[in-house]
Length: 159
Image (cartoon, rainbow, N blue to C red):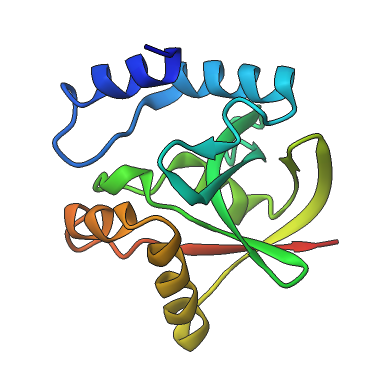
């Protein structure tokens, strides 16, 4: 059994909402992704449309630089990510960090891109949500698990 499979299996004991593995597993994921240029950790096993990027962000209050692995979709020259936190009742920290510091970088494979984050809303958000659920149906479960929290969609545009 692979390291990622073990982490996923272990995490299901800790959450009834979804597979949110937390900060420790993210560090392992990021390290493997960087070391292999995304060959390990660049896709969600079993879901070919669920590709993963590394999202850099700066703490809104702390100013500490962090990196989070996030499922993404191409959107023209931009990419789109969902602040799902696996259906937890709160937004992920990276969402708040991007709102405070929208200029950042992402890494897809070995390519690092400078981007600016903005929140999708209205018809654009609905269209993107449908595309995200098509790529990874787990998002529908995450939204149901999140209860009243509406999962934000973040567009990362080139700068």
